[in-house]
Image 1 (cartoon, one colour):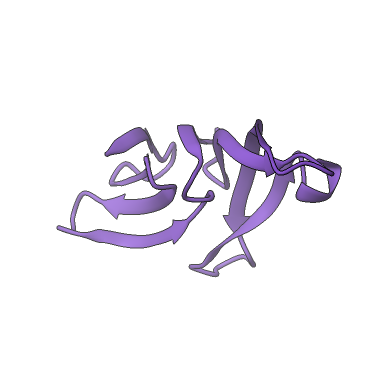
Image 2 (tube, rainbow, N blue to C red):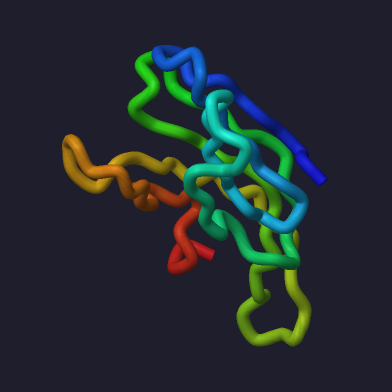
Length: 106
């Protein structure tokens, strides 16, 4: 189930979607299939948004991930924002550039 989608601000045939299993997919309206996808968040998380920046260079995903509570067997739903971008100019791969909060901050 798709939770959010966003059109690329510079390329009118490209859009991205985030589904309820944390799969971030990239689609071209000229193709019948997604051109690239990756696991953006943990599978037991809740996902809410995906959005491009105004230049189309960065992509943000947000949701809630289960984070362990130190010294306890319980978990806490923690709001997570992840920023994605290209590894290098001209590279077709996307990589995680930033996570807030980072797992070590929890």
